Length: 193
Image 1 (cartoon, rainbow, N blue to C red):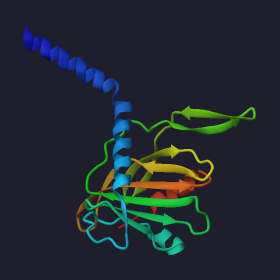
Image 2: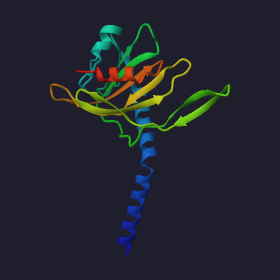
Image 3: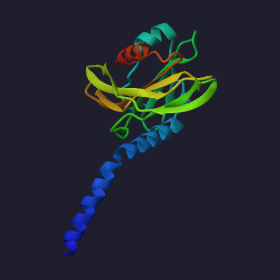
Image 4: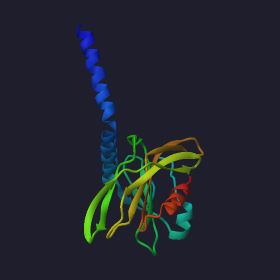
C-alpha cells in the first residue's frame, strides 16, 4: 500500500511539474543568463578560452574588432558594436556548459503611448528560427526598445561543433534600435568559426 501511495504521489508531482515547467524553465534560463553576464570580465585576448570561438567576421570587417570578455570558466563573449549607431550590437556568447532549455519564448513587455498615457504592456510571442552553420536555432525578442536602449533579441542556447570536432555552447544576443527583425536574422546567420 505504501509503495502505491509513493508511486501516486510521484506521478502527481511529475504532472504538477510538467504543468508549470514553462514558467520554471524561463526563470532558470533568466537566472543562468544573468549569472553568466555577472561572471564576464573584460580582456584583451582570448587566452584561457577553451570553447571553440564563434565570430561574426562580416561585422568585424564593417564595425571593427569586438570587445572581448571572458568568464573564467573557458567561455567568452564577443561584442560587436556599430560605431555610427550605438543601439546596434551583436554579442556572441561561447560557453563551456549548456544553458537551460526553454519550452516557450518568454513574454515580451514594454511601454507604449495609449491615449497620451504611457502604458505597460505584455504579450505572448512565437519562436522565430534562423539557420546558424546548418543548425536551426530558435530566437525571440527579449525586450522592447525605449529611451537609451534598443530592442533586444536572443537565441536560446544551442550547441555547435567546430571544424576540428570540438563542441561548444552558444547564445547570440542582438540590440537593434529600430527592432528590425530582418537585420537581426542576418547578424545571427552571419556567425562562423
